[in-house]
Image 1 (cartoon, rainbow, N blue to C red):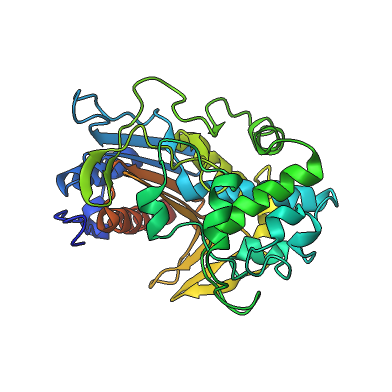
Image 2 (cartoon, rainbow, N blue to C red):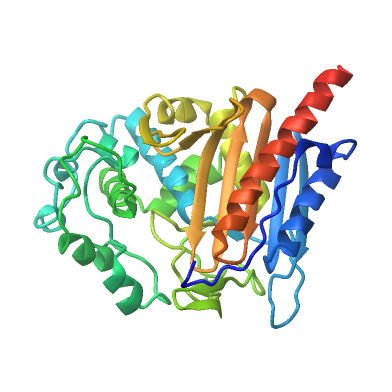
Length: 364
């Protein structure tokens, strides 16, 4: 907080704030309150009972004054890990990958040699973030890397190799972006296809997506500008390319991110067979939190369950969660590094979803 000088005022809305509001009015209220709390702009989308509602507030570009639009593609950042996990599980189904095989059996010796835990860790442990392989993010990489170029295995491997193992494989949970870089490489090796081709084949085509992109820096002109990097709290980060690689390379509008998550986690979802396997094994990742084979599970204080992922790239924060018990999926994105506002977004969207569901039950 000292670095970012966060002066935002996260709105904490209660169920009574949504009484008698329609779903559209509810998410617009959340979007407007988030901008009033300090975000330059925000996009909010809810899919509920087969209906989709979206809202935007604030600006996508502070300099030009361009208004935020719910149709604009979002930097999914780490939500991209769910896409990579879905590809890996699909390749498991095809018997091209085995979850308990050491990753060294799939990877080139030049990759494995010198990488802590790489000779012992399994594919399953990479998916669960229990491999103990050190991440490629450290202070040197933040300050010395050229973030205007894409993240690649060749670029990240030396950073992880100069680190030390966090623990023995399987001993505990520690989030590792490097694990998903390696998963992307494994998927390409066993399939003979690029990860972009695999995402197209396994996700984009079956779900009829037209605006989901992998490793494209600017899919459209006049996209969303983000704000905030270390020591530069409100610097424009539009031309940085942290949103790349198997761990962060997806860009898509909120509607297609929501549809993807619904198809993974709902009983009627087209990718339900993949989602069930992703959620078939979990490890504890914190208080009321678990990590599946690519999806996060959060238990709320009120006893509800959120299934999804969050994403954070320089100047952008995006969240995507489903609440299967009330047939709801929500996606929200801020164009600033404003963690407190992002947490309030998750909370407020959950509260609004519960209120809308309670009202529907009463009407029925």
